[in-house]
Image 1 (cartoon, rainbow, N blue to C red):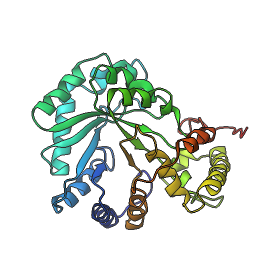
Image 2: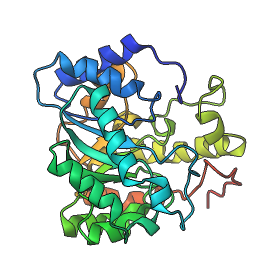
Image 3: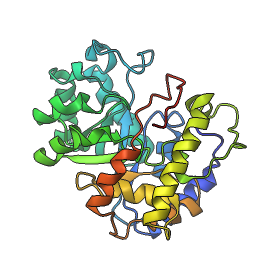
Image 4: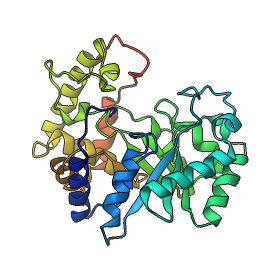
Length: 308
């Protein structure tokens, strides 16, 4: 697993508990465990009677550079027959007749003006195999999908948005609100940093992607920034845990339709679900929290942090 070993039964128990608590939207991807995540979700939902909405993602053709260059040819990354074929595979693994939101797992602005991908998605929708078309935008280019939104080719956008990463506020969120498009927020904890659980002694197992993300100075810089967020939280909401505060931040923007924090066990399912009580942060707090934003590129660069 990208984030360390994961026991199937822990995943199943967490999903059952989440549904018991009223969670009705599950996001996954073909690339998570090479389809295994979809299979686990399919096994769980087969035994549940509740109406659960499922979103999954299609990766680009194997061998495609990731992140993709801005001049990436979409016919090489996402040819129409590939889109349709991979959707059929996801439907089989999920044991569903229809995927509620079928998302491209990555994107570049070069795709917006092309029609082939949209024609393939529209065909799947006409056949009743998908309900909505989604795009998961890259971490550093949240605005890359705005052209497709403006042309009404996309129904939902999945984007990184958290206390540190607030770039979607500037352009993407106003566009989605004006066009009445859905926003799915991913990485609300910034790979776990905003849960407050990491210390100088934290070590990740071999193969965990966080070894790369938090390498070198990135980790110590993150701890300093988290301390600053914690100080703000303690002044305004001492009753909340840092994780609850981070989730409520994401849920408090009117553009946000859903937040997908991820769950690995029952405890995380219960903790995350408890925040879905409708209580949001005040607008003045959100404005003040803009000072906590931190523009960084941990996946590709080790930084020299400046707290000023």
